Image (cartoon, rainbow, N blue to C red):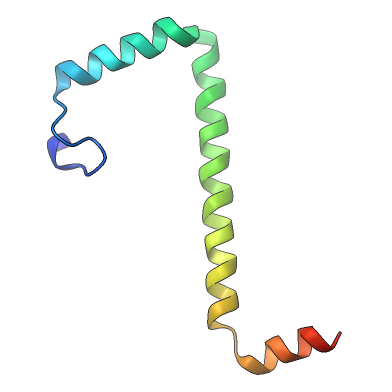
Length: 70
């Protein structure tokens, strides 16, 4: 199943373990949770921005005109 993910391509379990070990060596055990927390916040911010854009696109024209008058 992991081989079918788009962003991983044809990486196997061995390659993923090696990548994980290199990341652990480069950043250390204490830095990784901070990096993942920052990544999670970035993803959430991106999703919120996409939702706002979608709401703006699907909003009726009348609501948009009222906002512009204010």
